[in-house]
Structure formats: C-alpha cells, structure tokens
Image (tube, rainbow, N blue to C red):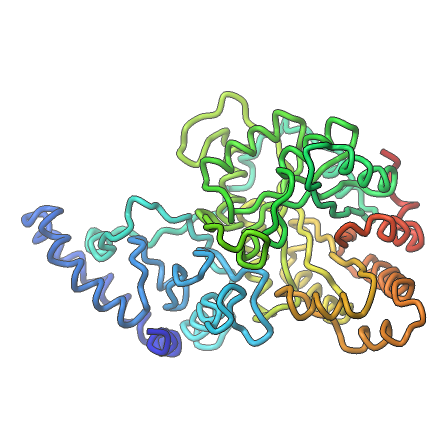
Length: 469
C-alpha cells in the first residue's frame, strides 16, 4: 500500500477539497443514522470507510482520523505511532529511523501539508491528542456526519498557570540572562549509587543542571527517576528525562508525581529511541504518547492540577518542562514547526541534538528568531566530544539525527592526539554556540566522558559564569 499512500500525499490538496465537501454535506445523513441506531449505522458505514481508507492512506483504523491535519498521511503508520512529529531520528535520505526502507511518515505528512497550502507556508502543525484506544476499529465518518471536528488540542491559554509556582534554581539560571550550562550523565548499571554520585561530582560548581538519561539508545540502566532523585537528595540539580517508548500514560504520570515528591523539579520529555538499537531488541515498545502529548499532560498536571483523565490531584507538581529538537535532520525547515508544537504544548526549555556544524545551527537559529520562539523558550545548544575520529564517524553512521561534517573528521584524523584535538574542536564549538543570538546556553553530552566534559566547561570559559552549587 506504500505507493498508494505516496499518491495520496502528492494529491493532498484535491483530497482535502473532497474531504471538505464531504464534511459540509455529511450532516444531512444524521437523521437517517439516528433512525438506524448507532450499531446498525456503524455496521453499514464502517466496512466502506475501512476499505477506502486502507486503499488510499494505508489506514491503521485508530478511529480518530486526522488526515486533513497531517497532509493526507496516516500518522499511525509511524513505527513510533507519533501523532505529533517527526521524531529526531529521520535519516539523511528522509527515511524512517526504525524501518530504513520506509519513507518517514511525518516527512510525507509535512509535504502533504505544504501541498494543501499550495506551496505556501503551512504554519505550525496543530497539536494532536494521544490516541484513545477505545476508538480503535470504529468509524470516524459517523463523527463527521454528526458535525464533530477532527481532534485537535489547543494550547493552554496564557494566564492559566498558577502564579505562586516556585522558581527552581535551573529555571532561575535560564531567566538570569547569563549563559546556562547543562551536562548529560547516564544512570549506572548498578544498584549502588556510588558510581552515579562520583561521576556527578566532577561537575560540582561547573553546571546549572545535570540531565539523567532514560534508557538512551534503547539500553537498560538504573531508573532515570530514581537516579534523578538520588542527585536531588545529594545537593545536585537534576533534569529528569522521561521517554514514551517504555511506559504508557498511567505509568508516566505516576513517575512524574513520584519524581516531584522526591524533589525533582525539571523534566525533559522525549519520545524515545528505537528499541531494536539497544541491548533488548526483543522488547516491545509502548509509544502510548509522543513528546508533544506528554508535554501537554505534564503541563495539565502542573497548571490545572489534573491527570490526563481529568481526575483532580490532591497536590499538583511544580515542573520546569523541557523538550528536544534536532536541527540537523530532514526536513530541516519543518523542524521549526515541530519545535513550535512543543513550545505550544508546554516546553519552557529546549535542548538540541549534538551540534558539530555551527553555520548550519546558525541558520536554524535565524528561523527560530524570525518566529520569536527564543522568547517563548530557552534554547540550549547541544554539543560534546568523543575520543577519536573513528568514534565520531561511528556516531554519524549509526545514530540517526547526528551530522558530523567531513572537514571535522579530517581534522581530528590528522591530529597526533585525536582525543585532545576533538576536545579543542568542542571548546571552539561551545564558544561559538554561546555567542549566537537567541541561544540561552549549552548542553554537553558524551557517554562516560565526564572528565573531558568538565575540562571543556573550564577551558571554554563557561565555568566562570555558573554560580557554584
């Protein structure tokens, strides 16, 4: 069905017109459906709807059709079932991170949106809600006949946030106007917290916050919420990363409440990497939510004091919410639209994927500034260092979304001490990124490379700008 799905995207404008005609005239059938009754009406309509949508759109029968919002590309064909995309793992050829032989569904969707708008700027994509599993295998034509609109989540109106919310130190640092520094640390493969605390100690007084990854690369480590709580209990400022890959909305909301109860105030919401790349490739991914819907749920818990179900919380958490963006993967222009979605959903700080190409990042930031997104969220430019050109080349070839310029690889390969040269290049990148208008700070990454990253912070001059913790 894949070629037919591409045909539908190429003819998205015509199909959108057909849908609008149907939506305008379908309510005339409502009296007939009421006479037939809901069961008989659905039994009559659904087989026709299913056959047509499977043929045209490779429909996965979620029961909550959003095709007119997604350029006539069914988002449920995404292996991560993202309702708001694309993810940060799109390959350089525009194909899927999980299934390299398939074109990314969201690359198709964004192309379809452009066609619907006749090549003009489609604007920010709407924030689509998470799938309601109860509606799988149900007719959506019935909802159109009854005049119900496609499901879209609007941003929470400005002014609904609780004014008494405490401002935690990381948020205060972002608001201060100085260059913020964060660093990423992976939880240990151990039940003993000593290793985690020893690695975190290398950044004492050097950073504003320490990110704790959540099963990065699909690999198993200590629970991210537990590791973040350990850091908070020992005087550090953690950023708790939570991914949608491994837990459904019930478990994630429970973890968020647990994190808040244990003193964690900063949360980075991610969709998550493909499980087949990790050490448990046989695991079943969940992807009940994506990063955008998770942000909306977490924001609702904070600002409205409610679970996603609408049930009230006895005490609401107070989170500084963040998300990620990858400026270096296709479709690059549409990364801005996805960033705007995340900010609308509740992200107040943004950390980017590894940046090894400053001019490319500057072009991204120019568009961020044009849309004023740097005034709505704090942008932290991600970068880091590896020990050799071989390691960098492996990352570029095996980690979707990472782009390493050929000239940088040649520079490090030609050096007598590749590790030292890679560190020098990282320092230069950090200094360049910190000087770009709209960049609020730098986020450093490098798996179990804490000593080098600490030296980068000191040598780049960023350490002088961080208040000792």
